[in-house]
Amino acid sequence: MIKDKHIIGTSLMLVKFAQETQVDKNNIPYMYHIYGVWNRLTNYNNFIQALGIMHDLIEDTSWTLEHLKTYGYDKKFIDAMDSLTRRESEKYSDYIIRVSKNKYAKIVKHADLKDNLYRCLMYINLHPNDRKNKSFKSLIKRYENALLDLAFITSKENK
Image (cartoon, rainbow, N blue to C red; front, side):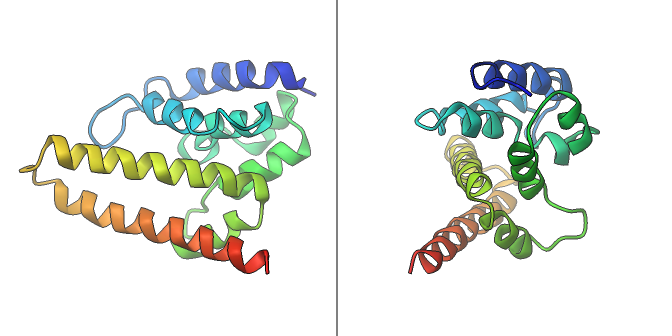
């Protein structure tokens, strides 16, 4: 089992190994998004920060939840990673509902959506005449709706 004081370093090492060469839709190193999500979670404990660092590892690489067990991640972490991983044929709205059922995944997904939203808005502001802006505006709407859904599901649970 990974000790709490080592979970961030171990997670960074694994993500760098698996995702360091990946780029996003704009050919920007994907690690910037990972760091952006992590930065939004610095007020949380090491467990949550490590989840933020690794939030897309299973979905975007050949890594599996079984690999995480091999590296010593516990069941709570693996369950949260499973919740954060969108299934191949899963509707996005169903995915958000599933994420919201795991309290750790919900925190990380909120940070992920905020970082994605920020990156889209920055792109549009920096490139106002770009043809890609229509698709970015569509993504912005999707991220805003997902953030609202997460908030609504959370507020319903707290009643």
